[in-house]
Length: 120
Image 1 (cartoon, helix red, strand yellow):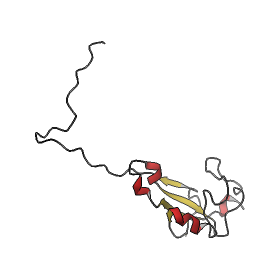
Image 2 (cartoon, helix red, strand yellow; image 1 turned 135 degrees about the horizontal axis):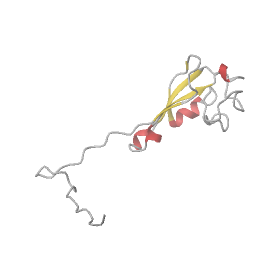
Image 3 (cartoon, rainbow, N blue to C red; image 1 turned 90 degrees about the vertical axis):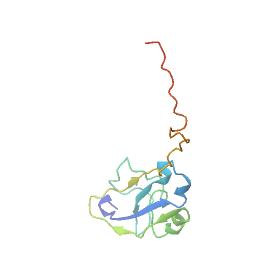
Image 4 (cartoon, rainbow, N blue to C red; image 1 turned 90 degrees about the horizontal axis):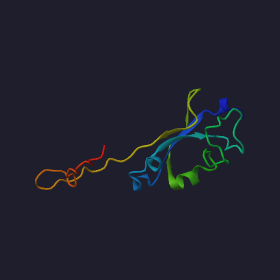
């Protein structure tokens, strides 16, 4: 198989990504290669070095491993993509954090000025 024949992708996200609101990698949604005929044992010819392909089913998805991926991830239906689409895309994000509360005087908590050192 040649890399030009890799035309399907799925979108994945860790099911419990919300448990890691400040970790952009665990929160990331990812576009992953989908092999409709099964994940190959080795990377297809022309597979870029910078895209991981350790073992079948580890970083790619096929009908045989789809259900095991869905144990831990939300996985979209596969879609055909146009030639030249990157093999993988990663969309890291960090959940919004609540703003610090302020005391009754309106000053943010723990923001008292600290004198600068006198050494130059």
